[in-house]
Length: 225
Ligand SMILES: C[S@@+](CC[C@H](N)C(=O)[O-])C[C@H]1O[C@@H](n2cnc3c(N)ncnc32)[C@H](O)[C@@H]1O
Image: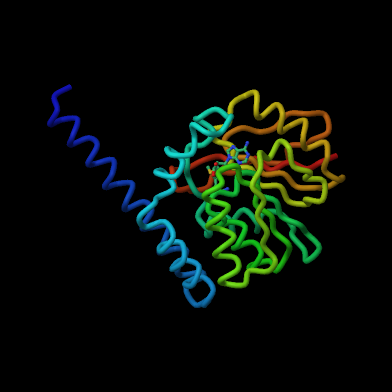
């Protein structure tokens, strides 16, 4: 392929990606735009990541972490998608939300505010957790908490809603995560992306496609038996 053709293809992909994410942003704003905390959170995310993007952070920190690089590929769940996911499961004020691989913490902050429930993000990349804790303190998101750890080594037994953006996770990690969900109590809800978890202790209820920062992806909804 000629250099010019390659350039055109990459520019077109970049352009369509920009328009796609802009569409998601406008849908998000139509739903959350009247909330003060939403704009404050957006501002903090912009300030904290404008000069040091998630992609730069991962590139810098990945060599120090002992997990496959493909599992650190960064992408985000748009808050409008998170809202649609939560609508499909029956949530109540006693629920406890865990995001395994919490990234910049947006889903955790959102769930803690939207449902007013305790929400936890477990994230292995120290720079994300440092920034996310600073934002939490500044904006007083008291129901959100973040732990810097490999999620495979964290006690998740109190989670009643477990969210795993697992699209890039290896088969081995998915197997370990399947085993880990045995820690959960009966009726806990487990949502994974791209691949369902298969175990006798889990029932796959249904699956549905949603829009994510990287494109349309199937989400799988399970329940702990
Ligand atoms: C695709 S991002 C999802 C971010 C966020 N959950 C969302 O949906 O917007 C996946 C995140 O999982 C983190 N991660 C991957 N493997 C992990 C592990 N073993 N323990 C903790 N975090 C991990 C990555 O660093 C990355 O921030």
